[in-house]
Image 1 (cartoon, rainbow, N blue to C red):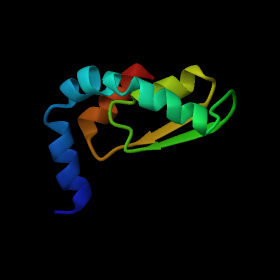
Image 2: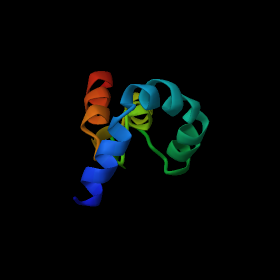
Image 3: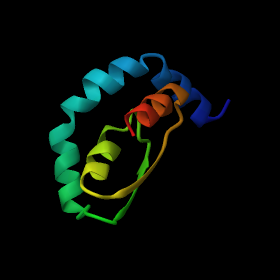
Image 4: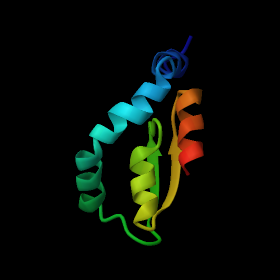
Length: 83
């Protein structure tokens, strides 16, 4: 079993909890990160390990063209619902 399978299984167990409770608590960090890397209209933003997509959603709201990748299928499902 590779690390993507292991991590996908671990993070997928409580995907809803992570996406809807924990990720939102990281909003100040995500906002500072997006400001630091100058995310703006038309910028391409790739979120490796996107989880439930919260940072990607913030980038999209700033006009970025967003793509994300995660090992957890349930988290990708949540990210796609929010897109």
